[in-house]
Length: 573
Image (cartoon, rainbow, N blue to C red; front, side, top):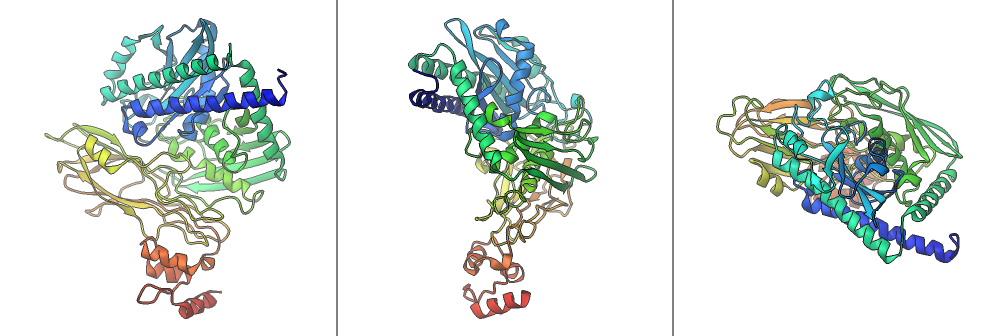
């Protein structure tokens, strides 16, 4: 059968689809076996299969862009350290090197070679965010990466099926949650084993000796399809910038995007320099989220792999906050890096007018809560714990729909359930509800944020490590839409808390987080009055804001007062 015949292409497409199913089962194994709630409940992970050159052939649908796209580059670093010829069946390799992995020490990437008939045929890789790596803990307070936790270079997690007990013992001695961290290591190995087993079944079924021909088909098809999408765009150079809170001073993210015959080039020249704190971003994480921003609206239907990623090229000047060198502190790199899709989408808006959403909360509002000796003062008999809660504000309104409320974009992680967090740590979540009037007004409303109130179940002091943004600078609207509401964090005793850094919550006080809303899209006075009425009924918008921001006046029974609304809108015009 000719490699280019219609039947051959159909055959390859079937195998490609099967390969995607293989890596999705790989990811689901990671979720089912993970110890950290960040993976098990929030889905903060990635999984994929690579050829022997380190090219990603397929990624699991489940996972985050920061993990998947950065992991796509990291496998090459593993091969530099351990060439395929040196690999043995049963070997497992691991690292959390931020510059060779996915951007900070909390993410461990594990690579496992797949052998068939005594010969390596592919590589499986997976990444997960573990709850604790020692050091200062998950937060932006470090000044160098050495303070942020245990740092593993690329090394063996297992040799020919035997776990590296010396490594595990060192890790257990350096983290606050040794059982969880060690369990997650085994979980990463297990999910890769699932991928290997399913790939071998597939190769037997399709009578494949290797995946070279299939990999070539995937690379060529994806690359060609992505270039076709790009070449349909108006060629030119587009610019955008975004100012965000930063840690101790504001940060400017500046991008220039060029669309041409060979692809899209994104350059972040003009971006603010590196920070003295742990919000710096390694270049691999910058490339991961910037390319994802472009892929959201260009070639979104093309499967994600090395072939479709290579036409989007991302650069940032060394020494800027988006290309921070070792040994910069990088633990909270997501607080800056997750803003990049909105920056890139802002570049694309002139080229794709009417297709680009408004800005959203972007970076996660994921508080890390701690208790124990020395963390929150003299803790006494209170239970020591470390727990990460994944939550977020609203996304930007879309050109033809409202933004999503309390939804993480661009990371895509899920909110962690209150019941789970209360079961694994001595905390009580007293309130979790949508934040009224937080979504930016527009023809399509920005997604609303949420309000949470948390306290110690034991009435003891605890600490929060925060890595939040959009407290000073809101998510901007688009095409006449208004900005979303900024966030806020404080205690019920009236103490205002900063958006970034570890801060104490005294005994008996409640931590209150009011998360930002997404920007609106289009003129708010063009929004259907009945939709505004529904927003008021659902307590997403107040009656006062309905009249002020949308020109919609409600009668005493909650219905739209048509004459008053028409008069209010005519007056505003």
